[in-house]
Picture 1: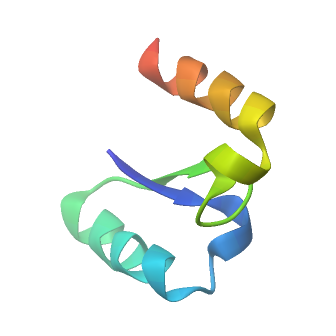
Picture 2 (picture 1 turned 180 degrees about the vertical axis):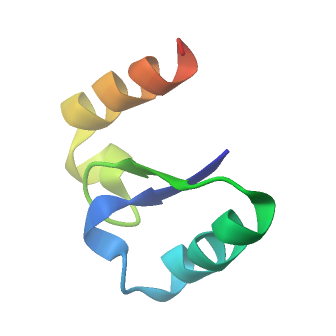
Length: 55
């Protein structure tokens, strides 16, 4: 799974996933916040992670 922070779409850490996703036939799974969304949006990040892991 390729993942990235919703607020960091234009930032360098997000770019490799954005480039790889179409090549791998998938998409980037987005999480709340930026590069460190787990620290800046912990509750929302945890909820999204739980959602993704239970699919």
